[in-house]
Length: 231
Picture 1 (cartoon, rainbow, N blue to C red):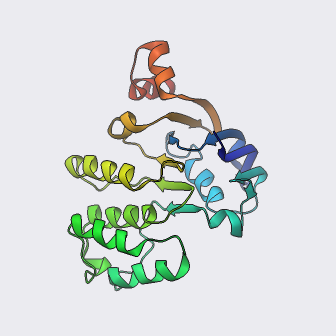
Picture 2 (picture 1 turned 180 degrees about the vertical axis):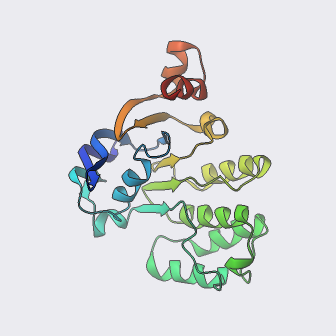
């Protein structure tokens, strides 16, 4: 199994507040990893470093053998926790922009999946519901043939039934040798698809284990493990 992501001694501060404190972990290929922790635990800071949006960290990050930069961004597909598109843009224009920016973006697949979800190319971003806005972000991110997908709080506005369908869509679109890092508070909705879980607390990793191993050790769900750790 090859290594997709490796972090060593990763730290970052905002003024005197340390958002990440000596974070080290590895993610292999073909893995789906949940990133969990309360608000302010450092999840978004970590994700933004991996996506190349924060650059003044200490420690090292390697993505497919490359430090964060042009080469890593070419293999990382990132969906942020807020809508990055202007309300007056058409879906078709966004897809065209991605096709121009990323050689690995499959516009045809994106259009087909969005149509399945009843999101149409001539729709305006500003007319989408919160749930459909999140579906749009997810599908655009997953329509790249990336090595590492990063989804930050992708499901908060999607109703439970549609959530189940979009999770199945993510699995269908994800290449077998790629990996997914998924940050969400909705642990129960994605627990069944996870290979590993990372718990962050006060900028430190307090747990990183295979999910099956957690269940075998204590006979409890990942949600129960989370409540026990952070209660």
